[in-house]
Length: 154
Image (cartoon, rainbow, N blue to C red):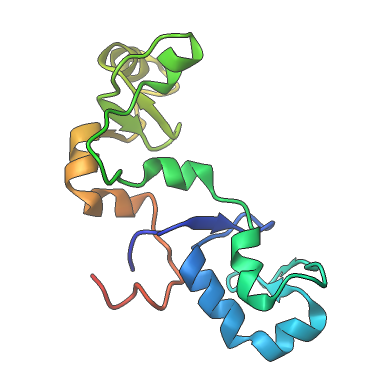
């Protein structure tokens, strides 16, 4: 298993990296080209139909990016991530942690508050520095669990 490259979400809410999804679509090309749709590799729900003018080689890129998973992936640059809660209030405060349950980056103050609340004190929090410096920690939250390309890379 490995980290997503570009996480794409099917209508059934299953998410796959774009290259692995495209490989799956390509492997089923003859079957899918006639139907103009695909089955989710996990739940077998139908996704599509795709427009006549779209080639099968473009289908994976037509699905929306899963922004939740995308936000959890490590960034290639060391640009500071800002606190989602503070940003919603109009402030720009550097995030120091990420709540895996709420799927939000938080600053020190928001993390303290988050850890005190009855409803959120048991949530899994990952330090942003650890998230950026050790991408393997992200894998518990953001794995492309059906990627044939990634299964051998751990």
